[in-house]
Length: 166
Image 1 (cartoon, rainbow, N blue to C red):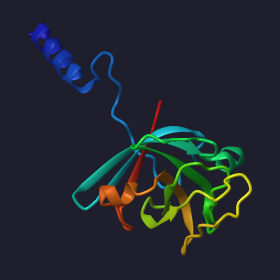
Image 2: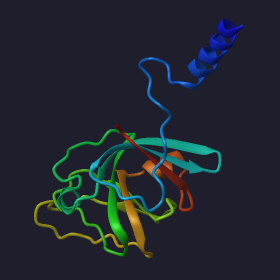
Image 3: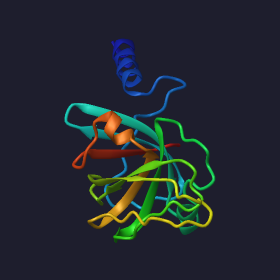
């Protein structure tokens, strides 16, 4: 009887543990959690639509200032997530940015507030530069290839979920 009971315990435990070589289920970042520079998976939900992006997370002042400068391409399902310590209203510009981008401004509860399309400046090194300024305070900003949100059917009000890479 003890062997049968022990076998049942092992079977139940095996069913609750990750398979060898796999990892535990991913946990989304909580609203307001402190984030540093890194990588992650960003899921976007809009009604029945779902999009998934691999993102570079830039939280330090230096990384945010560098952004996507000097890059000549960005994979279709990739982006850069700018993280700020508090809600703010600062605008973005395209200095030394060589690819047209769309930017989504996101609130502290991971809701998409606004989307703007950003054009490459006539002279990316010296401008003039348009300032892309959102109409409401935001906590995060997501830069993707221009038109990504439209191609995926994503509009303001979409919900986002960030899973940090390990």
